[in-house]
Length: 166
Length: 226
Image 1: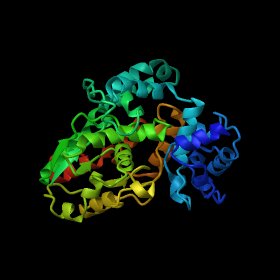
Image 2 (image 1 turned 90 degrees about the horizontal axis):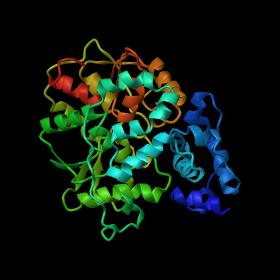
Image 3 (image 1 turned 120 degrees about the horizontal axis):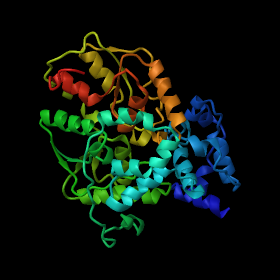
Image 4 (image 1 turned 60 degrees about the horizontal axis):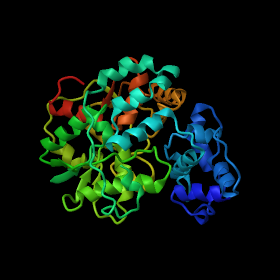
């Protein structure tokens, strides 16, 4: 149960906020994941979460949610399911090598430095067959040097310690 | 008008064309853009912890406090994150597309027109959703194209998802979603989001995918080809 509350909390909700879900499943009917011919139901995910049951990392929504907010747009209560999915991904630690490289770049520079992100994810890029797209990317990518953001002074940061990790 | 400018990471990297375009278009109309000093990444959509995510943007707003009251953020993800972090509506955070309204278009100096070209305007997800942070000028691309004589492809794909968010996670998902958009659209695709540009460009083959600012610069005579 605690884990469930944690996920809802990470997404910026309270458990009561999700009780308004009517179960109309309009979110399921508009979900982008359907376009991939994978059937999914964000409403069932909410329900499972609300009941405190486990959600596996193999859940189609956890794996493929693109964060398009089509479900939120359709939902009568504007429940932000993509944010709940992101919190779930965080708890289930499903981060891809790309996400790790992205966060790593932020830890070093405070900004995303694309060449670093690409270099860090090279084994993954080779394995998943991204190299054939390299020519395409070089066409429009520019060359620039990384820029380091100054460290945040925690006392200036009124919103807790986490922002101070930059 | 003086604006605080938040380019975000991708506009300093792979989307540098969009950065130059936005600066040039707005400067031509007499607006002054000044970068927020020492800005950091907005966290995009990579963080599960909402607090952690908004803290990135809160730091940016902290840096802009006292310097600017209006901020322009061209990247849809940065725009959404900044807008959500500004809980007390201290700043007016604007997307460039909202600035390209009727007054802007009628004051534009026209050199080229778009006659004989077919365009498919494509906004993507985050510019149009969710409601609270969506842009207000939701037909700006269509208005511009038809005003200057271009033809708009009939099938509407403007609010479909290209899966750009998943390009380095599930390539098959991005490939399928982007190809769906490319199949349903005609002519040149006009986009604004750097991620949509990347996803669509990767799978577009011979099809042209251009930034909306390229289109404006072409009309203004800054560029000779589309």
